Length: 239
Image (tube, rainbow, N blue to C red; front, side):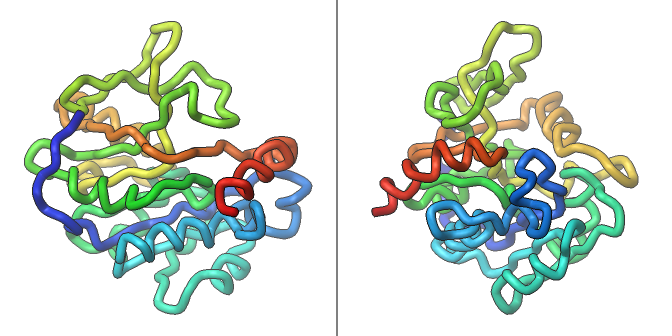
């Protein structure tokens, strides 16, 4: 387990990824972006903002592409918008927003993640140590990743260092849609569209990719059927 750096609240900036088309969630996303689909009475995007408020994040950037006015109208005052005329994927989207994000390490969160957990972001901020990390990922134990059907993403050492599942039949941890990144990962990165997986690989090659296990619940809700299945469970957890 990665040990605390002893520097609480070092991360004050976050980016929310909200530009995707949400095709797997159709027809619910025919007229609304996926982050604005409600789950147990709260949109996915509003849930992310709740986590950020609890962590006292002072600067928040949201990227848009599909139905951008819907996102712009839904975010709190003071939120910065990074619009993409063409989809840039996760890595390209973050790179496009770098002028708004500033020079310090920052959170990147999926705008359609549904998870519970007290002080998750605060814990990640305390654990962040840029002297040895370029990326710190929130990880979910595969057996606790509700709705996830893959073979897992990462192995994690006792130090918190990560390695890919690769050709192994399975890995114990799944990426949870939340991580902290250092700006140096985008040095010499591609132009246009690319995945954040490229930045993780860059960190991994240098032994600077770390993870922290999530202590709450986590739900992969990417289809109307998944929403129907897990919405009652989310509602029960919050009742």
